[in-house]
Image 1 (cartoon, rainbow, N blue to C red):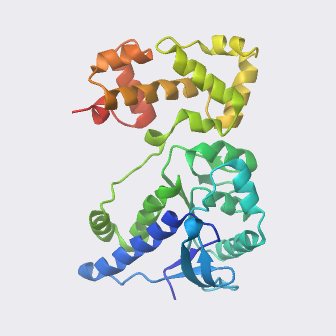
Image 2: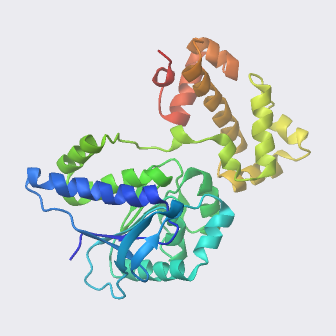
Image 3: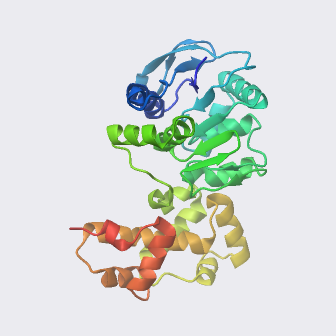
Length: 322
C-alpha cells in the first residue's frame, strides 16, 4: 500500500509535479530521525509509462488503478498548467483528463482523500467533488470556478483549504503548501518542520499578498479599463459612482460585471490597486510611510497600515526598503 498517489496528466505544470515528489523525498529522508515510517508513493497516469509535461520534461508513471476499494492513499493532482478560462475548459475536455476525473470521483466515493492545487481544482469540479464544499484555487481563476461550480464556496484568499476528504490549494507553487498540509496530517508537526527547514519553505496562510489586480481581469476589457483608470488617477481615483458614470453604466450593472469577472466588488478592486501601488513604492523608493499613503490616496499612514493589513496580511514595514 502507498501513502500517496500522485496523479499526473499530460502537459501538467512541471514545477508542481516536481514540488510534490521532492517534498515526499525529503520527508522520506528525514522520517527515520523522528522514528516515523517513511512515506511511500506512486506516480500514476491514465495509461502509465512516460508522461510529457510542459517544457518537454517527462515523468515516468504507472497506470492509474481502476479499482480504489481499500486504497487508503491520498490522491494528489498537481497543477494542470493552464492559466486562462479557455485553456482550462480545453484541458477539461480531453479524454484522458475526463478519465482521471472518473477515478478521482470513485476514490472519493470510497472515502479516499483527494487533493489538488491551482487549475487542477477545476478537475475536482469536473469529478463532481466540490458541491457543498469550501475550496480555494489560483486567485485569478477563482471567479471562474465559482461560476462553473456555484454549489461550492470559493475562498480565493486561502492558500490551503481542507473540507472533509477534500483539500485544495491556490496558485501553482501553492503545491508546496498543500504538500506540507498533507504531510502534517499524516506525520505530525516535527517532521513537517524538519522538511520546511531542509527545503527552506516558509509558512504561508494567504494568497492575498500575491494578487495582481490586472490579472483579476482575465482578459475582461471593462475590468482592465477600470484598473487602468484607477491607477492613472492616483492619488485621487474616481469614486465608484464616478467610475460607473465614466463607462456609461449604472453602479449596479458595473458591480455585477466586476464581481462576475473577478470575484471581488468594485471597491475591493480599487483598494487592491491602491495597496499594490503602495507596496511597489515601499519596495522601490525611500518615501516615508506617510508619503506613500498620500501618494496612493489614503488619509494618513494609519489608514494605509489598516488597508495593507486587510489586503496583504502585513504592515508597510514588511515591504520597506533598507
